[in-house]
Length: 251
Image (cartoon, rainbow, N blue to C red; front, side, top):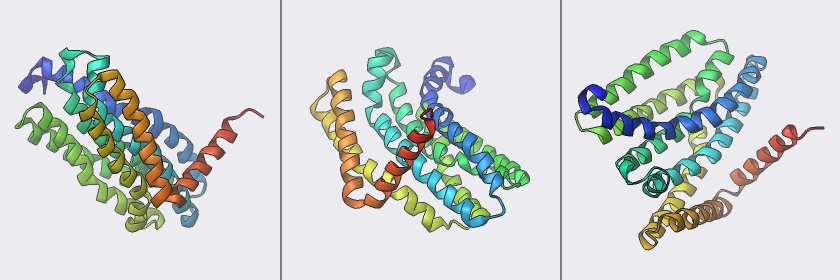
């Protein structure tokens, strides 16, 4: 990218790319450190593995998808407030990579599942395919400029998603349809909340006010949609949070 688009473009992309890395490192890796020994311990019981994978995907989806959807919507205001006008061109990159970051964080658990079940060779094969696909996406995107690189990387990641779902299904029996049902509640809620947030941004162009009210509105709409249409998923998510809070509280 630095060679074909210049150092300035590389700096903009590097700043936006950090948005993708943050949830992977803070959330995805934390969950994986917990789940690897769990998957290893119960590898012989596919029903238990499927149950744990289902719970992990639900927790990751409801934590990450709304968060990154808000970042994607608020990227212009966030960039202006935190970085200033000189970095304004990073905003659309941040929006695209935030969406890609949500997908990557959720399916960051798949390599952990493969290694935990003793399928390190399968994981290596997937990593080779994934690397080729994402490098290909970047190279194709280079033809369309800096935003094209971000879109190419994100699209390559989404193209790999069916492969990851099939791998998870074959490893533990959690079907692709079940995986989609797990991810639908946060996606559905985030779509409605994103629409509300974008409308508010048109009405309130002020940066700080837009961010503050936009976050409140986004959370309220997300909670409302989950409560009205996905109450079971919401109750399960809140139960998981309570259990995590109890585990982290010193005796």
